[in-house]
Length: 231
Picture 1 (cartoon, rainbow, N blue to C red):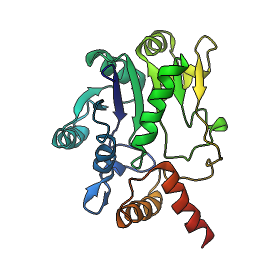
Picture 2 (picture 1 turned 90 degrees about the horizontal axis):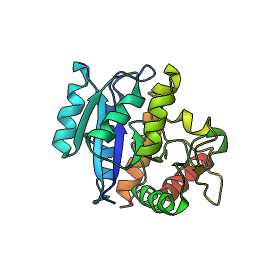
Picture 3 (picture 1 turned 45 degrees about the horizontal axis):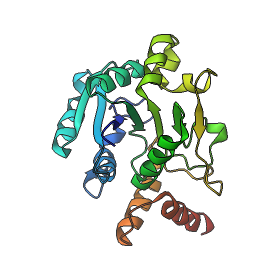
Picture 4 (picture 1 turned 90 degrees about the vertical axis):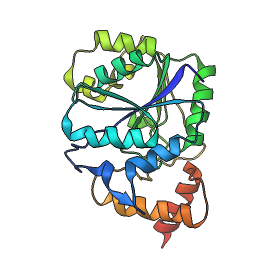
């Protein structure tokens, strides 16, 4: 997987939940927890793509401490951040993750890479577009080629689309896209980190996984969330 790399976008200035990536569970920030999880995939480059602003210097220090690569770019034009990051680190295929998903499943990332390799598509996701998703909100993974990213970078001019990076893939018919769907519909489950109240749920999941020595697959997390709903 030497041509593949995880590009994790992270910044401290979220409007809905400022500095959420620094919020702690068991003396670890959610960003540290996320990086620990994806570092289990040994053969991938991991790059944290943050902004040029000094307020995100802490992200750089934390990423250096965790032994992952760094790229700094434009805050709002996240598309350009991804493009220049992938170009600098000579990636042919990009796995897009966000700081909103601290409990991402490394096994699901590996599964999706294998599917992407064999599908001959430009873009593969498990939760986008949202109206077709059967995966939980918080398990978000996207994979696309540098060739396709370059095309988007050149043709996409809408500021909203450039901020959200991958909208263009399913707006234009010349891209081959695929959404991965599990056997059962888990889309009503949520463990994304958008609002302060989300930390309550994420802490419960994290503590449950640690207590039971579980790796935290999507299936394990959903199984636990089902028990919470039933009580």
